Image (cartoon, rainbow, N blue to C red):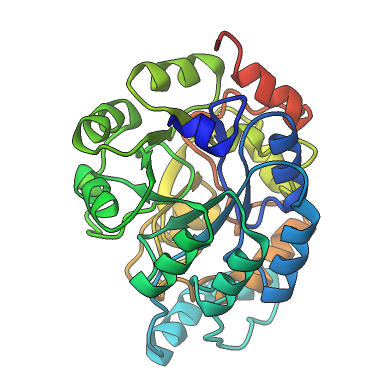
Length: 343
């Protein structure tokens, strides 16, 4: 059975889960328009996730996305070093830094989250940074969900297939937000979407979803021509009214001149965003950043102060390399535009 038939989709377009820039409203709009809406769960409490999944029932197939990272050990020295690195910015703005915190703010998939999957039975459950432990993964599959995870290399795609993934998102280096790599931190191993997708298609038997740099109808058609059964699109939906994208982020997305880069400054893991002052002055990749996901707490006051002054200098402005398709139109209209020419 094809991927689209198994999920029950009219259009082969997945909305990328974008924690911090969306809630269930965007997921609902995409699903009701015939694509696969996604709900990012890593930054939601159990109670908030339960409410969101209840609200989405009846809309159609939904993808609920979880992180599979391993929480870091306590690292007070690195947190202190991170605060010292940021101190000049606090002094310049005349604001007090936040107290050192080891609150991760992002939770990996666990038994409580699995309980909600079993209760609400979403059509698709996707993971970033690998797969959960076998016992939890078995419970997800027993719930009837299609299990999807992200691969950034052929080796990761093969690993995911061998360990139980029902479909694989092949994430090219162009993609916005966090890289999904989990077998190696070597970014030089990661390919562009047009190179990665056919290699993954030829290396696994499960369906492949293409992601990265796909933000207009031609990109959708090209990815499908390379053998992907569907595409995953994120950046192109960030300016839709149903998204919760902050004003400084929306403005940056609509300014085509600003470049993007991979950076670990905002979370501790490489993620692609629009280059801003923090990335320019500290370097987009900096080995003094604490491990994922401990970095954001140290930036909280700088980000708030900047955004209060309409500045994204200290904010994560996540974006893929191709944001030509960012439009301030309803999500259903954007989805229909992306699907132009598909039969």
